[in-house]
Amino acid sequence: MVSVEAATSADIDRVADRWVELARGQRAHGSHLLADENRANVREAVARHVVEGSLLVARDEGIVGFVMFELQSGVYEQSATRGIVQNVYVEPERRGEGIGSELLDAAESALVERGAEVLALEVLAANEDARRLYRERGYEPYRIELEKSVENDNHSKE
Image (tube, rainbow, N blue to C red):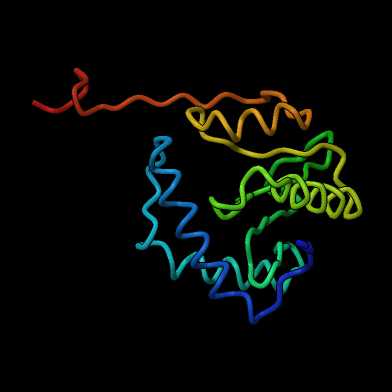
């Protein structure tokens, strides 16, 4: 039986390792993020989330998934308080068991308790499984980010 609970400082390295696995897997969907090269930065971010109480883990004999979340902050005033869900991860062999949904439920509830009026997350366009999960959960496109490679473009210097 999986339990979803707040991460502790003892979980920092294990979550950072799983984040590296997540980043490696996202490369198959077109991510430019380098996994191993970012481990130290991610470890710091994970530690910050632990201190802020904004990192949940799914446990079953060990950590089988995690999610990070926070209220959006920035320099611009907005008409709604946005809760941001980040890095929903479930071990590949445990996917399809509802663990991702449990993590997402818990993160959404925590964000609402903290004052979120709308919830947002990012997903790579090529990650059909994740996009399907989020659509089923009521997430709809809000902002579309477009990208192009300049490698073979006429903008390169001659």
